[in-house]
Length: 445
Image (cartoon, rainbow, N blue to C red):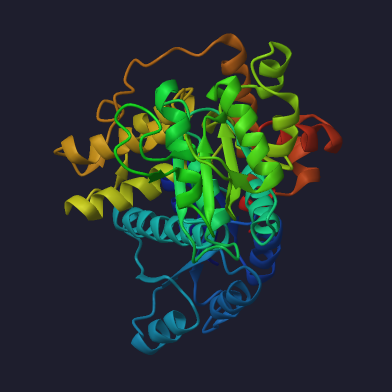
């Protein structure tokens, strides 16, 4: 629940706004500047509604506004006064006030001002997160949860090396995006980036696809053809679903990694190739090794560095961050002015298990934007109305996540106070933050 601090020396105004706003917001009241400053520090309100004059002819409200601008920049200020003074209004705006409201209070009008201010605040927070962690440094890999921050850090560290990388994760988590991010931050970025889906090419064609062939080496080989590895010379080859490689090609790939040369089908001599390999799989390669389906020596050659992508269901509020990113992108592409998601859509996205991960979220939002005739996206537009029910464990985890998030929102990310509110120890709260991939910095204001 958003938190609003009302600062006014008139007790009647304080009680009026407390009564009018408390159903939608958590309302804090202050009758003087000293109390206001204390509540700003302890309560970390989202919005402060300030009366300019907290005493006869005074300007204490503007002094509080100056403190907000200096020490609590994430708190949005709405200045309120009974004085019809445009110079005061302009001064307040120049000092950082988001809006200016003249008494007497019309509650319905003030609620509109509050909602507009909260929307501005929300957009600013999301834009800061996108700039800091997602869109700019890593293309469309957007995320703020701890596991995604680890992924971004790993990309940054490994990109400038020539190490072989194995990217693991469920289908739709963005493994190719990781490979592209590594390539385009590497010294090979001017070279080619070649993608091969090892699970999508028939086995009898895969060897030629990877290693190439000489003219006349088999029926239909009317000309010499370079394979994808050779075409990637000087750059990077991304071997998606590498766990599907048949045993014979695993041997050839291992030899290439060791010798840095390939043998075309029907070729008389090896061809030297300078290529970096990034491989990916949604299979458990260690389990495949135990089954005898994947070579142990190849596994260790491919997994010099392993980057594991988390499933979307474990990424917490990244779901909302990604949903809003896709909504803005697709709305712009199709020329629609879609303002956001309904409450039922937000609820459905949070409770859905996302078996198709980020790819499924992207596709559902794209379809909803194209098909909807409304200005907001509903759960029906997303195809999530009446979706798969949660298990008892999933419901418990969801309740746990929501209670932790709400406590962090109320305390501005203060661990000690949040733990006390939840009735648990600080150590337990830290464990739960890690379990649910909740980024503490998102809540600190």
